[in-house]
Length: 290
Image 1 (cartoon, helix red, strand yellow):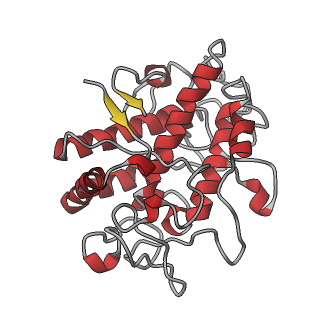
Image 2 (image 1 turned 30 degrees about the vertical axis):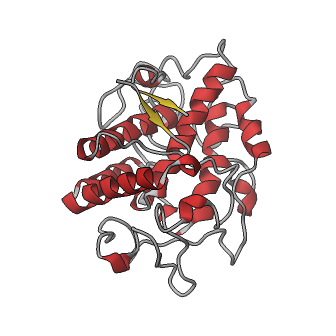
Image 3 (image 1 turned 135 degrees about the horizontal axis):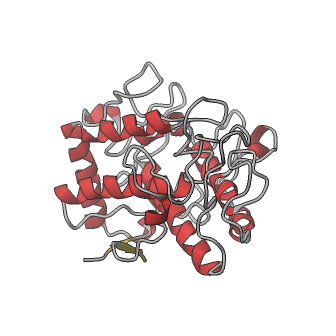
């Protein structure tokens, strides 16, 4: 049966409560921390050795689609009525937006140590303790807008810039690709300072705290951000029906540059599942967006 992912701004109080309760149950059981570990393990940068599947690579979109599906299936084993909501960050662009209320994500971190003090994921509730990550504290951290060096969430214009590109991805298939929808949506550019970030990446930077780096799954807003990114891939395909839905079709050949064995072509398996990007181009038989 096809289920629906909703805009978080249109969730009822009961829907928010069921989603939060399911997330907290995965945390209680230890399953949530396994999702954090998987993302940390597969966060491989351009300059690192090994296969890149999650970030700075063409498989950014299908990899996170499968990652979201795994998380959603776990949630639905707890409560079959639950799905992952999405956060339209071009519309809900302030710290006062509904997702930061005490019934869903909770609010910003306090100034002294960026510790989140409100909502269901505050350390003080005793239910959300950070066990996997790169910080000394065991509490969730946020730093909305980075007031020490202010930034804003992506605008409709910034998103439109990515959505207009009719090509899925381009060589060299990494964070330096100047063209291609994937890299523009992921948000890497040749700019400096705050101008370096766009779209998905800018959202991570704006939230700050644990949303920076491979351990970003520690903040449950990670899933709402990636649900919207997944929706945008859907919209891009509808806008460019004649474009190849995934590139490259074939892997870079051995002896033809440094990318051989570093990225997944359309019909190559992505770890940790060995599922091909081609298998994740569509989702209509599983879920839809409202």
